[in-house]
Image (cartoon, helix red, strand yellow):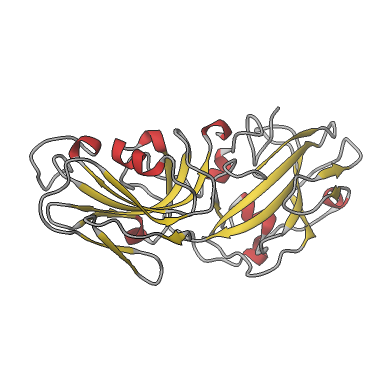
Length: 318
């Protein structure tokens, strides 16, 4: 089956169109991590409804995969969006990350193509902007918003009818329950926005990688090969200085797969739950390799990271 343009290849894969706003580094550092989306009025970004969207009947409650009914084939000339259920609470603003779910039907045959995002770990949170497909469909909706959208045929595929549910606004920092600190490990203090400051305990670095959960999230567990959305700060043990931090780059989360980072970072992520904050002190062997400590790279360094896990998409859903 093929969902286009919001979902591609199968119901278990998300197109590059939606991921364009939240792609990130494939290494443990975030060179090339995304910049904050410009502030824009999402209310004005939502496209208008029309005959095609009005012709679609949607059954079911927001947050659960719906059933669509329309007379096929349905003529779709332009992108249209019609709000079916209004959300409640704080409306989303440009640059925020949202959790969402989608159901797609073929406009020509009326057949359901699939749904995705209604179960934990199926979709990575996406950054919304006025120029993104999500922004054009959802506008400045609030959690619980349900919108039917009609997409005309293009080079990417045939015309399709979507229902998009705005499930929630994802915090920019870990929200899990605080856990007791581990004696002997670095300590962490948080700014009002969640940005961490790491204080090293002094003395020689540990000879084995150490991991502690600072906050325990309530989301899905991260599995090997998952794509994750995270905030992080990393410091060198040798001098305590920060060498990389998403918080220093506009506070915008970045994403990568757990198998695309150094072993210590991977160990810190896999098995943890979404919403968690993790502290890891990794040896050079689990970082960037043994060698003489220098100012040009991270060889020989014992590294300390604080990682906030904000979302995960299972490898089976990519």
